[in-house]
Length: 376
Length: 264
Picture (cartoon, helix red, strand yellow):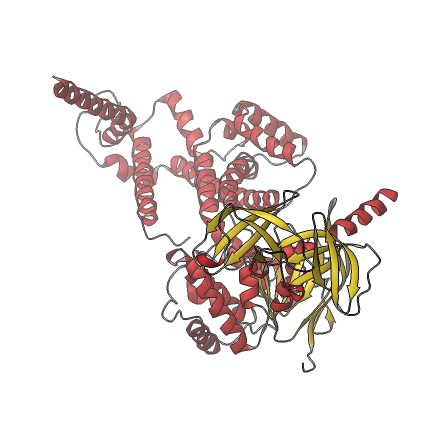
């Protein structure tokens, strides 16, 4: 990949609200022109990070640089970034023209230029002719476009978007996802996008930063985040996963033999990663990668009974109960390809379809965190 | 049978509402009527005349009192509105220790008997050598109006989305600019109704004005009170009628404005 210029650098940033440590030691570099999504459940600190970049919160420690310049102490109106707010935050007492023109008016741009650029911007978000309407007369999707136009007209270096599609219905959301992605490509502006919707993140982003309880668990491309989750949380949060607690027993070449609570299986040992003998790990297999057979497969011993079948439109899911009571999910595109309810089957998989994760992760980190807090 | 009873009920409830309105407006109508009475005594209607209206411009003390009322009303309203709006805004925006107590303290002047407030203000003015007259009246009126402005603006701020202020700052507006271009216009309806309330209270006030006025600065209500001792003349009715008609006109105009399409 070509050399990219960093546009936002977050260095060792912490944020503490009262007794809540919301963001932990965050290091994150955002590059020019990329679409970066912060993904995580509510309360994971993603919005707080966005608000710190925008200037609405001050970090408790650490540095934030925009274009190489420190901004932590600057007011929102002194920063070259703009925000699209979750609630749109349109000015209800101004018509659409004045809403979109607001930023340029504050910069004292000439009148003719303002009206030219507002027109351009409204055309860009497909709202030509809406100048004289008021926000209360627009639909949710239209308000969203106005909010985007109002932010983009200032030609920011970085556009921050805080769950901008959260209030829209599913169909409109899918449309807007595509539109936003195309807009970002066309303009080449860096987008920092916050969402809790993993599908949205996977569909739109160049890179995803998966946040968990204030920690950055993984920062990678959507493919990598889905195919190679690095923590149990990421595997669980993004898409559906079957996660087994396991111990490493034997590694031959890059095939690892792993012992499960009930039975054993094969997995892929990451190159360059060393494991202690009998080290505790998590083995993660996606439901679509779980295979099954009537016969026993060499290297595997996981037996189960099919408990139920769930039809969810585009795919069929089967839930298989294994000996320790854990449910293993299998999904297929065709009803003929899933095992029937009541069937006794042996589960297996291709060894390179399983991701083996060291059992570190936020649980351990937060234990350490709490211990050190208690010591003080 | 049932239908008939229903009909009877609806006739009864109609009569009832007419009576309510009659009860409300009859006294005003009497004043209106007697302002055209040729007789100076307001017991019998003797004949129709515009005399009292024509003689109004010559009644210096009455007009002077009315001028004072309007002057005190306008100035105290402006003061109360500015202070009340800022107080409400500050209290809704910031959290601080003792905020709950300050909230309650704001209610006290509203529920406290006016006579207590009047005497207290008189004592304070005497102690601090404030000249008794229009100045003391304005201060007193602004004082009791502030809580009412705070309440109406509070009501408006309760539904106010703070993110629009953040949006304004995000788009390059400083704090003052944000307040004047975004916050104030959005809470304006609350500010205006607070101002109307303050003005109405000031123009009406007798008890507190009685304690806080000085020689030569009578207000209209005080003047009328004074006249009741010697007998109210029809020129007072005439002035009252004019005030009533202006008030009705303003009310109708403001209601008509409300029916325009919502912009906020």
